[in-house]
Amino acid sequence: MNATKPDERIITTTLSSLVSQAEEQGFGSPSIIVIGGIVALREALS
Image (cartoon, rainbow, N blue to C red; front, side):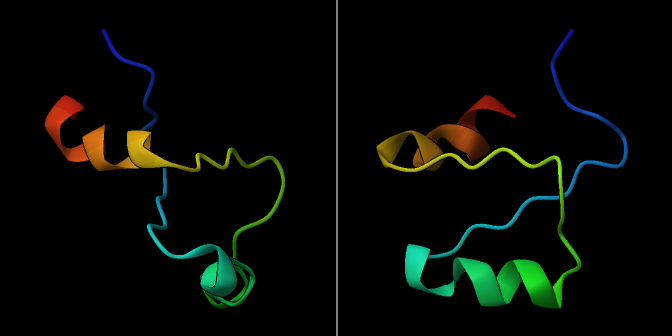
């Protein structure tokens, strides 16, 4: 079992581009933002 959802969407970007990327892709509330080296583990854990 994992904590993903079928309609989950992911953005991997820099902090300086986050707002524009989220707006372009239609992200809104609620959202979870993960910052730091842990982000690099996403592919290995999925």
